[in-house]
Structures are given as C-alpha cells and as structure tokens.
Amino acid sequence: MEHATNSTEDVQATNATRASPWGGLDQLRAPSGANSLAFATLFAISVAFLFVAYCLSRALFGGFGAGPGALAACVASTAAASIFLWWLVPFADFAEIFWLHLPADRRAREARCPYCGYPHESRTTCTECGESTAPLPAWALSSRPVKRLAWILVPALVIASIAGEAWCRLDESRFVEESAAARARRDPYTRPRSFPASFAKLSVDRDGRFDSAPWTELGRERDWQPADGSRLERGLGWKERADAKANATK
Ligand SMILES: [Zn+2]
Image (cartoon, rainbow, N blue to C red; front, side):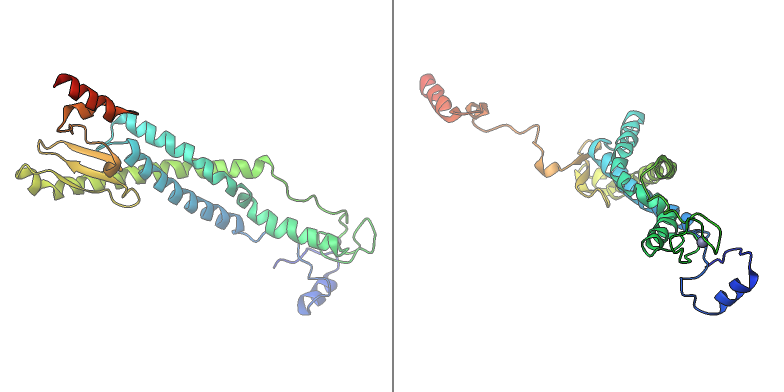
C-alpha cells in the first residue's frame, strides 16, 4: 500500500501508525507488477487455447506431414479461432479496474475523495490532497485494452502455431517408428493422433502410404461395393425399382 506524498508530514505519520477512519491515504495506483501479472495470465491462456486450436486444425485438414499450403490454412484457422479469446478484453485492464475504478466508485458512493478517501463533505476540492472530489469516470471499453489484447494475441498465435506444429510432427515421427514392424510385414497399421486431436487417426496402408484423417469410423470406405450390383441405386423407392429391374431382366 503506497502512501500519498502529503504536504503535512505529521498527518501522514499519524495515519501510518493507526488504522485511519477513511481507509488510509493510498493513492489510486495499481501495485507494480499487477499489469504484468494480468498480461502474463492472458498470454498463458491464449497460448494454451491457440495450441489446442492449431492441433485440431492440423488434424482436421492438415493431413500427414502438412505442406506449406496446409500449414498456412492451419495458422489462418487458428487465427480465426482467436475470436473466442476476445471476451477476455476487459481483463487486459484488470489492474486499472481493480485498483483504480472500483475503489474510486466505492469512495464516490461513500461521499469521500476519489483519490485519498478523505470525507469531502460536499466540497468540490479535497481538503486533504487538493484534488477535485468529482467522481472518476466509470470503466468503459476503450481502444487501450483492445490494443493490449492484440499485442498479447499476436505473439501467442506465433508461439502456439510453432508449438502445435512441433507437437503434430513429433506425433507423426513417433507413428513412423511405431509402424516400422507392420510396414516391414506389409500390414496396414493405425492409431489415434495424440492429445488434443485424438478424434483423428494416423494410418499407413499396405503400400506404406501414410495418411491422417479425422473421424475415420464415420467415413465411407471408398472401395466398398455391394455384392448385388442393383443395390448401388439410392434414394426413395430404390428397392422397388431394383426389384422391378431384376424382374425385367428375368
Ligand atoms: Zn483527497
């Protein structure tokens, strides 16, 4: 708690030694490091979220060992996912809200000077610190927290994309090692991608072609054909038409 530089030294000394009736002569200033802590927390949250977003993008449309085009698409979709972080924008002003606007609002309600907390008794100028006793403006969304969050999100996007790509490459290189024995036997081999993209499967076919596809169990087997060729037809009434066709050829 910092004390106001006051003209009357004896008043300050008295207030420092006893609990003052108006909450102390503290200037409205956030403690040093409050902003850094808020920014570091926002940065950590952003990196974690964007890392997951990158890994999910990579599994959805990156394929196995993504090329430059796929990498650009993954970074772009991760950047688009950062829209879900913009609700954090007031937290970029955390120090100002918590140590400036909230105490000032409380003091205004209690008819005290917004700067030092001394009861102003309806005077326009505080007798204690000489500041105006008019209430401070309430916190409102301005360009400052938006700029702050933007400065946090840009490096977070870069770091999360690099980390996400490294994580996916590591997973793929592990898969190449794991599948070595199966490939030597010319057997297909598959396993889920590592967290957080375990909905996607890495696979290698009999010819040693690596692939990565999301939700393979929901996909269609491309080479599958019905034993009865007439069942290739789909749509309402397909069975009747198939039966009629079968009867006609008899
Ligand atoms: Zn004052």
